[in-house]
Image (cartoon, rainbow over all chains, first blue to last red; front, side):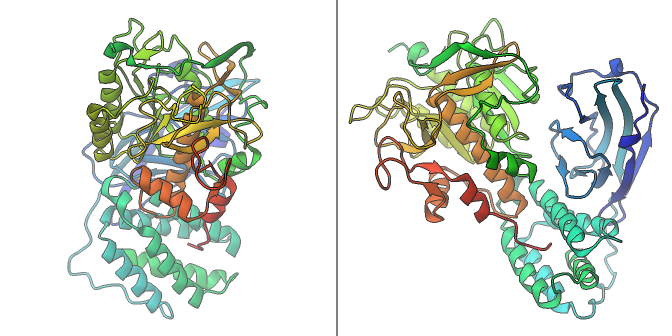
Length: 243
Length: 314
């Protein structure tokens, strides 16, 4: 069976305070080892599938996993897990709920047949920030942007979404290192869409679009189109405001 | 009327058995109801991700290659076949939802039995149950011969919206139009759902079978619609039954995309109608303005998504 070279886990990172994400990958197993109870297995050419099973409640925190593949993805549904396509290579899997996840990545090759890898993802930690920690210093030139982002978020009173936004922005700051302005912008946008789309319950009735519009207005004052260096600083300012 | 017989598939549903397509991986190219523009939107991530659509019907074939695994399912008909779709109508409707919103999640309440009919109690219970499973959109391609509102029906809608459902769609019926009102229930409950008329493949001519009347809200593709067939493959069907899941799939696209831009969810038929009308996102069909056959017309997919386009840099 062909090794799963396309399905290497590229990046694992927790978001928000003191969270940890551990993972362990197992050896390839026979396709027959998959049980179809958790997802329909659709044998299409040029496809990649991910199965998310065995979620264990009670562990606190969340995480973001990026898996590289340029192939089509089938995305079974699991509450609090969102898989999204980005403009960057790879797929992002956002864990908005804590737990232990068993991820099976399956690739179908019409000539060699299916192959899979099994990854155990444990999202744990969730230490609250120190109470007496002073607020982060304003990033020079971006104080007003930080103020708008912070006050707008506070007005919404939606900690889960605020935390998710801070988390994905912080994660993608690492990913856009070395990319140009346009590439960076697309990745940052994708991360934000992912976090907002994953909202649940009362968070869905919060108007984050107004926050987005207000922050965008401030962004335009301090970041010229194409200015990657200031763009990164501005996103960092937003992260500190949200955290 | 015997309650068990009240709800049924629209009577003039056209199933063209001569046009059953072989099993294939992708929707056949003859599926005119999915435009190139919609496919472009799908590739841009406007695909219904994270949205739950309940297709309350004759259930659906869970292992059809085109359909995703159904999140939840419950039989309200006491069918000996359980959630298996021995009729085919529900599978076809589910396929239409997925062709419009490929990453939407499906919920199934089997409220129409294997012969294609169901009871008031089952329909209403299925609606409330689907809402409690988290359905954002509920699609009901079913109806009776029309009549005054039934309080139990309306109460079930109220419970569904209270449970968090964003919008319910219902077929207007396939009784044609005689200048009066040929809309059946629940399609006539315009304060509680969007009643959907059917149009032809030119995207502007009403389907002759499409019922009409004061409660018509929107028009959607409903003539010669290719979608999933139980056992695998594809089949052509026509009816307001087909227009309704198309509209439901479209709503799933909107919900998903709006959420990604941070908008609040919309709740109930008025909020949804106002959104399309106030923002001029409709193609006016038939007589100028609202009319009893086309309702407010067809949602203009291109204009709608240009309107919602992500113009931010973060």
